[in-house]
Amino acid sequence: MNSLRQTIEQEIRECGPIPFSRYMELCLYHPELGYYSRHAAQFGKAGDFYTSSDVHAVFGRLMARQFAEMWHVLARPERITVQELGPGRGLFAQDVLDWSEKKFPDFFRALRYVLVESSPALRDRMESTLDRHLASGKAEVGSSAFRDASAADSPSPAAERRKNAAHGASRGLKAHNEQAPRGRKILPSLDARTPEAPTILFANEFFDALPVEIVSSQGSLRVGLKDDRFVETWVSASAVELEFLDRYSIHPEPGERVEVALAAQQYGRQASREIQQGFFIVIDYGYTRAEQLAGRHRGTLKAIRQHSVSMNPYEAPGEQDITADVNFTAPAAAAQEQGMHVHKLITQSQFLMGIGEANQFADAFEDCRLPQERAKVALQLKHLVTPAGMGESFHVLVASKGVSPERVATLAGLNFGRR
Image (cartoon, rainbow, N blue to C red; front, side, top):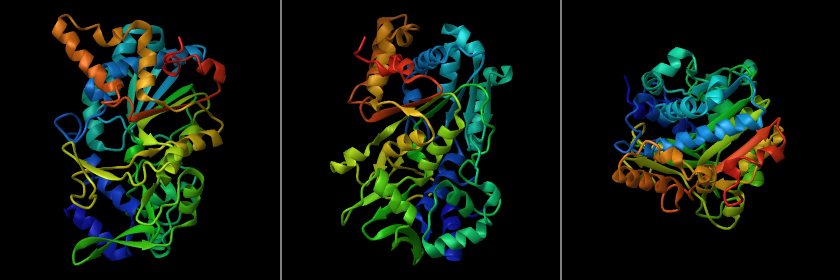
């Protein structure tokens, strides 16, 4: 089998320079060779990075409390679905399910937990992590989340790939899937049934890993080859890219680069469309257009390997994570376009403190028997909520549909310091 680098080089030789989003997609999501497809060892403190669920089970426990409160706000329906995008190894789901079963039995009886994961290696890991809940039918693992309304009339992938390379076009998730080798859609195709029950759609550190276009004052970035090295070239930015900059971002100054998150925008739009009643929660590191206008968050693309950050995404294809900060202005606008009420963007610190302050974070300390255990958990909790840890760099977007904004505004996570 070819290496991922050889696979990318072959596509460039066949089609010419490829959009950066296509390069990033292959690096992360190639079915056999992509960073997220090969194994699950990149997660956790011993891997390349860790998420909130790797810090302590309290993150999942607090979110279980918030999900149960959302169920109450929705008038305690007989069934409710929590759908998690990019659940990794399933640790968060395990914490939510175990804590809900123990502390919120009425909510747990109504709950159906769906994990949406495209990586076969991670799906295998989840099956062992969640074996009890999967066996009972309380949880299920799938590889796609939503319908792709455009799939029926799509041109052939090979033809569209040549067209995009020739014209420098990029059209969000549809373009990503059409550029994939024939029969190999890389990003999850959005093709599940519209959920019948009220739904809580949860995405923690999901949007930052979706492929982005890169735009500078020279145009839109393409990745080509010269003397067996990846080289950068530029073509005129597409109308879709320019519209994104106009509406949600800023036009780069000379020497600057700005990410254009077309795939994330498409996910946000379709996620919001599929929710008939419920909530859409996005937790990630990121920024707003206002912050970009103030001169911050311009050019946030980076590669991560063994907890070290590099600015070179071409160094080790498939062996390092590639990520970009989330432009929260774009998914918020997408949710509003689909009839959702978008609540004020808050920090992870405000959100978790709001959930935990009512019982003084008893969810975190319940299992502690010794003072040193409490001290260790206190440090882990501090990492989740303080500016020195993840508390201020991560933000929380909450959108709702089919429930009055006044009722949603009573949620603990949206009320830190107001009680």
